[in-house]
Amino acid sequence: MKIALPIAAALVAAASPVLAQGRDFTLTYHVERTPAAKLSIAACGNAVAQVARAAKLGADVQSFPGQLVIVKGGRAGAGALVAHCIAVGGTTVSVVQGIDYQPRKAALGQVADRAFAAVKAAIG
Image (cartoon, rainbow, N blue to C red; front, side, top):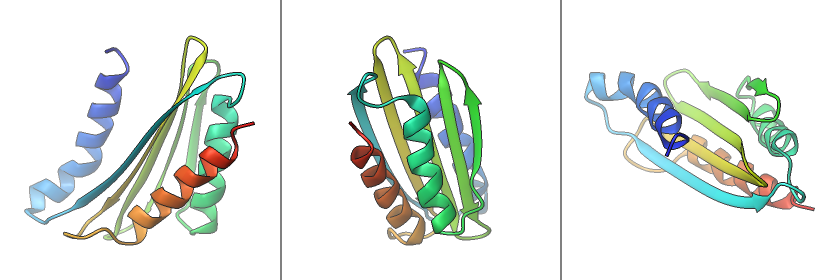
C-alpha cells in the first residue's frame, strides 16, 4: 500500500485546481503489471514520454533509478497527463492517467490511451 499513497496524492494534486473551480473533469486511468524482465521502468517512461512529446504536451520526466519514473505534461486549461512507472520487486507497474478538464473524455484522455498502448507495445 506504500505505492497507493503517492499515486493518490498525485491524482488529488492534479485534480485540486479543477475541483476548487467547481468544474467537471474526466479521468482516463490505465494500470498494468508486467515482469520487469519484459519491461523496465526506463522503457515504460520512454514510451509515455514519446507519446506525450508527439502530442506536444511538453513532457517532463523525473527518474529515480531502480524505483520510479514519472512523466507529466499537459495543456493549460485542457488537462494533464501523469504516468508512473514503478519498480516493485520483479514487476514494473505502469499507471497512466489522462485528466480532461471537461465532463467527457477529450484530448488528454486520448493521449493517455495512446501512451498506455505504447507501454504495452514496449513489452518485450
